[in-house]
Image (tube, rainbow, N blue to C red; front, top):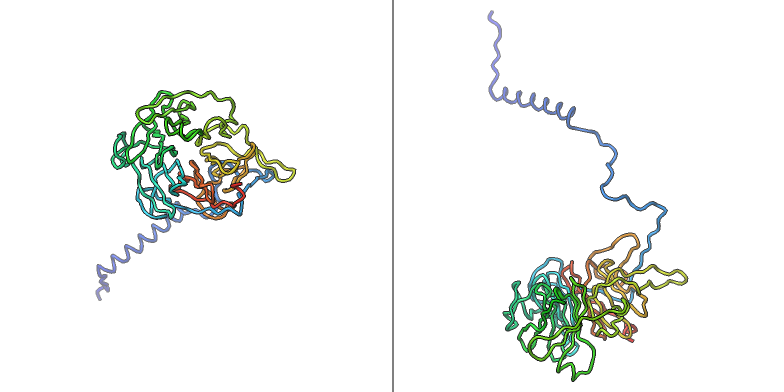
Length: 364
């Protein structure tokens, strides 16, 4: 009798080959690739502080409320109400109490923007990066960083930092009023205090330069270019207090005259690292510190944190609305106040303008 012959279909043969290959691949993976779980490797970066070290956390005031007036985290150039509006690195602020309008230097968009009392954002002037005087609708700026009101109604002076000059917006027209070697990159500007009639005839500005670190007075006539006089600073505290300098804002100086407010018998170390914005409030001043991402009240050389969270060991930067003791900021620059209820700050990294509702006692 002939031997029994079995027929194996092609489909079964292919299936057997696949199963064999799968077994071989599993054995190879198990032996060469797979490793059983082990201890978690150490994280990169500096080690955490030793357990015996102490971290001092200072928080703002709970009777202050912080909210977002306009803008949101994604950058852009859209006009509109509140969160619908977009900025790109806003830096400078000026508040006009006669119209309740807050003016903003939108540095990344090379524009001057305005925020109405109900939070609607419009573009005053600027657009594409460049340098052009003329009607506000077609004028061009380059990274404007500071702004202040003039002596005339709806008159604005702008530190056009990228173009190295000071511009004036008046009656819907943009002109260049100061261009001088002492102001290679103007980064702050304020109208000096003085007699109203004299200011209208020949306005005096105080400006600072980011490159030369000069502080100058700029005498601006009603038409044409003005003259520049270099100021000699007698002390850092004069800059912080604004004495004899027309209360300049946006001045970066070492905080030699500023110490922390004490809690009982325990004095705080100096709180303010860097001053990026300054404005008067009552008999004191509000200042912004971009390093600590906090808003401080400065009076008689003593700084008190009123909004934000400051740590002695690390930098706490975030974007959160809330009370003064829970709100956080990312990178603070310009600041302004209506001297009635509110202060306004540029949260530059968060591309928005924040509003602080202040208690009445701060204005007295």
